[in-house]
Image 1 (spheres, rainbow, N blue to C red):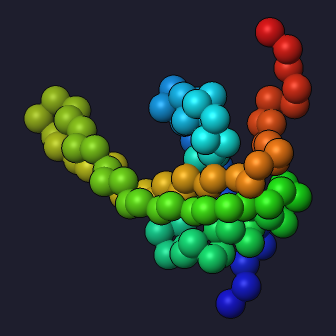
Image 2: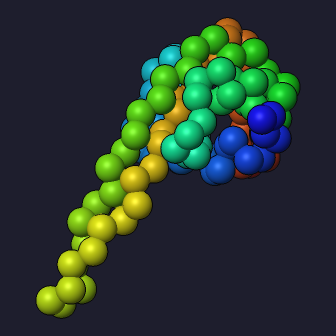
Length: 100
């Protein structure tokens, strides 16, 4: 019924597109979540795990890519992406404040 935040938030998806969204002042973070997770669960998990205020959650199912290995064709599993918009003044730092 109720899942822990670590069961809902599988891993952060750190990509160039996600970094551009965050730098553009949108204050967003992208997570990979289970296919059966909903927006309410994702919002509660982020707020509990990172102690931040969540403004909005958008979810989408990403289709698995078709891959070939010689004459064999397979498909990767579908996965769900959650784009979480944080309230003004809240941030999540995955790299522990590494200055570069």
